[in-house]
Every structure is written in structure tokens, then in C-alpha cells.
Amino acid sequence: MSGRRFCRTAVGLATMMVLSLQTSTVFAADDSKPDVTVVPAEWFWQGSDAIERDYAYRIDEQIYGQGVAHRNRWYDSEIAKWRIYLPEFEISTTPVTNRQYAAFIKDTGYPEPGVTREIWNSYGLVHGFEATRPFAWKNGAPQSGREDHPVVLVSWQDAVAYCQWLSQKTGETWRLPNEAEWEKAVRGPDGTFYPWGNIYDPTLLNSADRGKFDTMPVKSFPAGPYGLFDGAGQVFEWTITRQQPGARIVKGGSWDDRGCGVCRPAARHSRPEHLRHILIGFRVLHVTSKDR
Image (cartoon, rainbow, N blue to C red; front, side, top):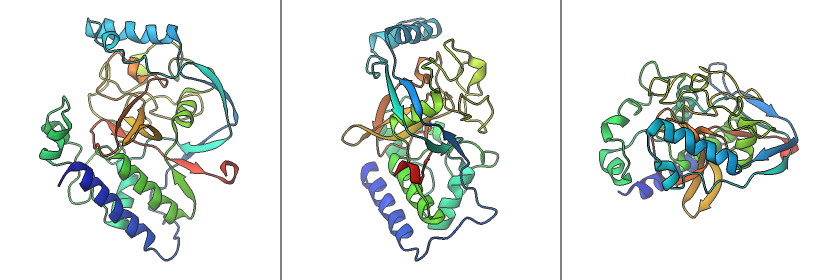
């Protein structure tokens, strides 16, 4: 079975399970409903200008010793910096964790995070299949000690299925953030290159420069301007924004990145919706009456 067909089948299964619930039940005391952070209604600077992109290329070149990022124009597709107004919204304070995702798996029987060797090899990624083994779940649970790490090896469809389940379970509405919402929540209103300012500091995020070269428990580093954690580094995060048919924008950088130009909130690239990657997780947005 192809990776695309498998993911469509899996997301259909979870949707049927969610819709089969006759009533909307609330979370039990031991369940893990995501904490949310309120991002206020205000203007903010989205995207990057030539100065910021040049800085990103230069710090990448210092680390890698060559202009790979510049030659491949990694950052040239970023949105041209502009000022945009967004109304107030609520977004999960951290990426969805393995512990939170486990409640979804337990409640629905949805396929657990993982990937076969055949499907992984079909992606053509630089990481070998063995690199996925620490992140793959067994018997419906993450490997011991990873409960509070961000969930990975989840496709965009998997993330949407989780949002559908969370909405049904809580009687509220949850979805993935769009690119602008994600960027504002992580970056703050002032248009700085990083959540903490304009100078890259490897001590303030989980990247390959100073991190453990692995996911880490959420909240291991300081929060950003609005109180969100892990928006830079740690894992890329799916958004609802489509760049082209079958591909969605991911944001944030990861534990595998050095440099870290790609960890800037303005940085962006797309990944196929069916991809289950060790570097990609997600966070969720709570739709309130103000959003409707």
C-alpha cells in the first residue's frame, strides 16, 4: 500500500470513529487537554526583508562552511515583510506532546505514530530508516521517557484527525493554525528575526548547535513574547496553509538544524501532506466565539 493511500485510509478510519461518538464527552481528570495561550488582537510584522534573509544565509554559511543555503535560495520564497492585523485567538502553549496524542490513540484506535521501512525509503530523505526507531511507538505508546516530547512521525492528515477528535471530545472547535497565526504567536508583534530578538542564540532553543540532537521535553527553553514554548527549533510544525495541492507549509525549524536560519519564524517551506517525518509535529488552535 502506498504512503498516500495508507494515510488517507487512516484518516478516514479516525474520522468515522470520531463521528460515531453519539455525544460530546468532556476530558477526564487524567486526560491531557492542551493548555492554550491567548494571542491578543493587534498588528504584527509577518515575513522577512532582504536584511533578515541575508543574515540567515550568513549564519548558515558560518556553520556549514559553504553557501549551500544561498545557492539553493532556501529563504527567497519567504513572504515579503508586511504589517498585518489578526484578531485575538488561542493556540496551544506547546506542540502537541506524545502524552496528549496518546489520549487520542487510546480513545479511537487510530494508527500510532510510525512508518514502515518501505514507506520511509520512498520519501528519499537524508535520514536512514534506523533514525526513525526512537520515535516510533510500540503497543499504542511512545517509548519510555518521551511522554512529554513533541509527537512526531505524524502526517498532516494525522494532525487534522487529532483536531477532529479533540473537537468532538471537548465540544469545542480545534484546528491547525494558518501560517500567519502561527508566525504571530511564535514571533510576537515586533518583527524580530527570532522570538527573543535579532541575534541567533543557540542556548535558547533545541537545535543541532547546542541541543541533544533529539526531541526534548517541551518547555525546556524560555517562552516567546506571548508565552509560547518551542516555536523555534525542537520540531517543525504543520500549518493549515496550502502552498500547492497536496502540500502544506511547515514552520519552526528542528532539533536537526544548525545555523539556524531555518529556525526563524519567517522561514517557510512545504511538505507533502502524507509525509510522516521525525522532524515534524504540530500545535493546535482553539477556535473561540471571537474567531467566528
